[in-house]
Image 1 (cartoon, rainbow, N blue to C red):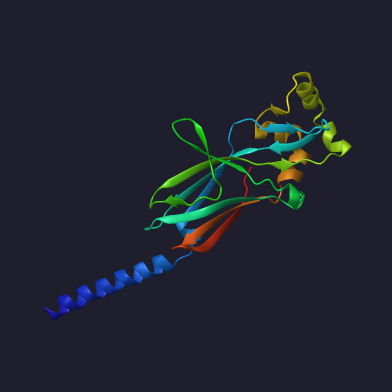
Image 2: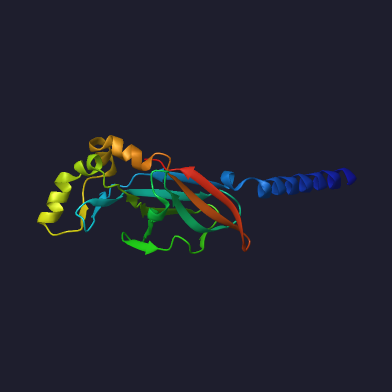
Length: 199
């Protein structure tokens, strides 16, 4: 009888130790982050000076909660590389796919991921483009089309097509970019997970 009680007690202690280690493990091991390129078109924005001022690249990020608890986060932040002037950091446009329709959502509102749940977000970057002749020359056909059609935005090919046509420019704009998610620990700010953006 005492042996059975001792074995039961040992199992309870082992279970509590396991729970303790699971709760203390890094958030990075609990939250799985995956990225995928979206097939939506790249968007160009024309300035009043008839130069391309902004390129918006579409991308997707999925957060999966592998922990045994609900996790909450308050901010998804896109961190542009050093080529982007700080005053030109326009963050991102964030969306959720709800019934096959993209719904705009706040990048800073509280969001919950229940245990075993995955949340997929779609976003557009806002990469500032300089006005140098070498850069703007690459956009000449697009600018001509926008002026002819009296448009200040133009949807062009996919990210993959843009990378093929403008390899060096794409590398310059996106190399070193990262995406950062600020999680909560109770009601306080907790761990922040930052990962390189995958294109």
